[in-house]
Amino acid sequence: MTTLEAENADFSFVHFTDTHIMVGERAQGSKLVSQMDTAKALEHVIQAINTLDPKPAFAVLGGDLVSPDLLDQSKVWTADDYEPSYRLLKQVLTPLTCPAYMLLGNHDHREAFHRVMQTDASRPECAHYYSFDHQGHHFIALDSLVPGEPGGSIDAVQLEWLRADLARHADRATVVFVHHHLWPIGVRWMDGMRLKNADELEALLRSHPQLQWVICGHVHQDQHIERDGLTQLTSAATSFQISKVSQTPKLFTGPPSFRLVHVKGDSLSTRVIHLHHNQPDEF
Ligand SMILES: [Fe+2]
Image (cartoon, rainbow, N blue to C red):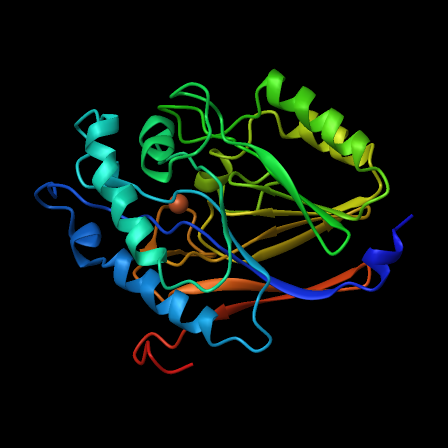
């Protein structure tokens, strides 16, 4: 069942993910990281998004917003160490002409995020999950970050909140955003770092037929898997991409990418846009 408002919906939004902004001292010998300019890549994506016609109603940032920890993996990075990366992210996002909703990923740091983004978190370590509506459609942002772990999980308190939120919006077509992927994408080393309690989350999502799409980040590649009416989309990253072929970690410095979704009535269509890497200002 959909509301009249949802039947008349006509808008688009963008999902851009794994922005991996990094400010800090670079470790010796990290060749790939030293080749990356993730802030510049994000600037190019934002320039492209700002030229979209029609303009997107909002943007969702799919997690791994920042990752100074990649600069030196032998060190424990504190909230203070993370803050400059979030400040740079905030600065790079300034030209974005639509509202931005943010998710956290495994490289993020909750305390530094809450401080810099001035959220209304009641405690520094609060998980960052919430929902919002647009033109009769309902959108849910989950927080799958487990500090210190590359894989993700949705804790019991958040699952209860989700259960109640879905029940309250049972008449609304719903899309869920979560950083970690639920279902294997076929790249084994990445699939070892997916959502640990994916089965539990999937069972809850499936008990609400108004929910047909889950949009994830984390895997740095675009994929589309549909199972019995539920679709998992993963988006390519703005920062760097991961091979869809290699079963061992193989990363590429580009091209910067994002997902565009168009909502018309109660149907959604989507495509992933990869910027031309050698001409980043040409859209
Ligand atoms: Fe990532």
